[in-house]
Image 1: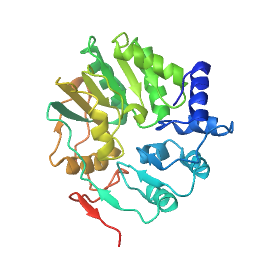
Image 2: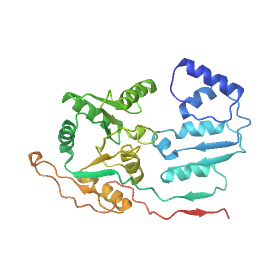
Image 3: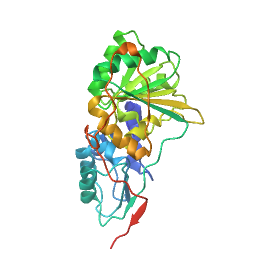
Image 4: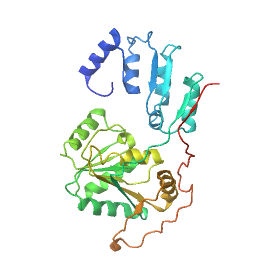
Length: 299
């Protein structure tokens, strides 16, 4: 359950009142039902938190803890997370009881994706993205920014340059997001700018190009972002813009990938560009040790 209209809410209420075997929901939607007092949870046996790191990044910690407060104490909990920062470990300590931990090495992006990175100054990003978009007028392009304010600013600048473009971020109503995604999936809309809110879980087979307007926070986010292209046996391209302060962060990602990403040439008309000379761990990245898959059993 998540988003939708009043009719959907009524259908959900009926199902939750009578009982259901499996419920898949967003935190906010479930809280709306829980606050009404009719949700039957006495027989609940399993709680599964998928993409827990993403939910915490989006500010759902308090919502999750509120939902958990309604649940029977005796249950099995399963927590899935692409990363394990301290906030995820803190959540695990609060909701899990003597857990078994399974760590799986990160997957690599499909070989069909042509990866290329552009090293440039921050002020050169918008002129370069406009240049690239003009050369791909008929292609489906998905642009990622790490912050919603960056999404809004980039969209404003590209609209000023006469590009037909839409945006998706957490400030949009669910109904508005659904309409934008419908237009993008049907190729009525060719260019979409979004936060990482859609870097996972969307299923669109015809995205020709993914552009990282900024360097993702970690390798997992990078792989999820560029994995939106080259789906369903098609080829795809992924560009990443690297400013001076983001070089260290991208070097961490390259180390995770196991090989450097090809650096693209920026037109001479854009003026001089910085040299790619990253310092390991610089630029706000989150370097993390990686390990082979292993199982740690309860003692």
